[in-house]
Image 1 (cartoon, rainbow, N blue to C red):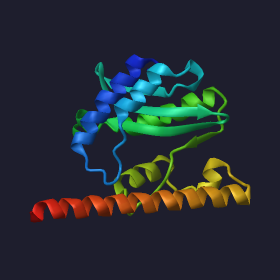
Image 2 (image 1 turned 180 degrees about the horizontal axis):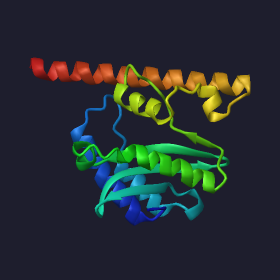
Image 3 (image 1 turned 90 degrees about the horizontal axis):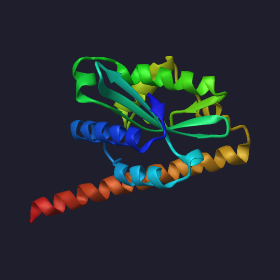
Length: 180
């Protein structure tokens, strides 16, 4: 199933909350409900596309992407406990379905957004497993302008520094609370 309906986004949201309770993802916890509210309020041509994978009638994986120009950009994904427990590999199937969906509509690129095996080894392993090789960032998003590439790399570096600082502050605050 795929589309931009609020009902599909709510199904994704339920899966995301289930997955987040299962995982420990350091430095990353978007307010999915805020995105759900935005989805319900924005114009149809700006809405996220939700692709949902069901197994025996039950949602087991979902992707949320934005489509702009010739690029589909992966924003969020989620898998159910059942998908993991039964080794359904639903997320891989869903990403391949996402690629198929994009190709059918004439999109040239599928941007999976970031690759950091040190901070996010599980996610990075998954992304690498989709095509068997790591694609260079600049080639992946189709950025050939040196100024644009430098700007993107600078922004990524700043974001990484900000996330690392937030992680350190959380750690320090947690340590300070335990000490008192």
